[in-house]
Length: 314
Image (cartoon, rainbow, N blue to C red):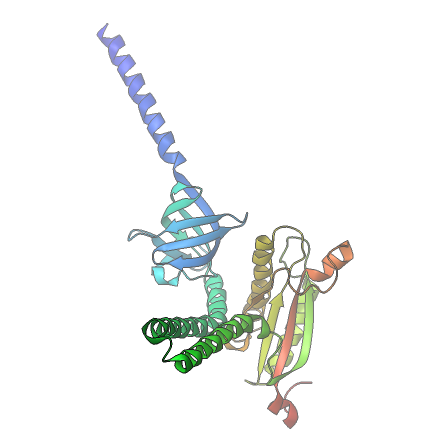
């Protein structure tokens, strides 16, 4: 009888351990995507299926990238986790929120994220500064109105004009990101190529790689007097959000090839332009039109002074 009771107890204990192991395993979350926002220790990661996951960092979260051709990984600080970086994460939580145990990324993807930030940060900083000025002038105006509306009508009018001017400046900065790819007034186009992509794809064909290599070779003859502009697009198939991500991946693929295979310095590339469904080259109502819209436009822009002097180029 005693042996039978012991056997039953051992069986129940084993069942409990299996249940506990299953419960713990169910809480393990793995995923990958692109950081779209960082707020303190919380990352907003957009996955390949357009889901947004909140990934929380802790003091124990390991941030690492592969080293060499083996399985060795190097630990780095959490400050490298910036918007635009592709990563993989593992941790505990649910499909909407994960506490990260490990985060892994490639150094090439970090370089691309830095290129993006180098192009977008000045615009964001200028917009934030204009917004602060706008808010300060608005508060001053409201206080002036409350204190002495009748006696200071002229001053109130002047302050309102300042608010309107600041609002106009904010709007102008917001538009500058799109304009920067088409209004580089000090440069002229000395070479260009368009890469076309398959539906939902951002791979570059061998023929396009050769064309990009020729464009880069021509660019390097101009010394430091050139930039290469990259702007990528998608057709209207799918959601606007997914097409925005896809156009970003196409721009990043082109930039990665120029950096890694063509030896173009980071500072010579205008930050990748993820244009989504905007500025279609043809109608999205037909298959042929959509194929023209799945593209990346690459232009070699050379300083007007160098062009006028006749140095460099073919």
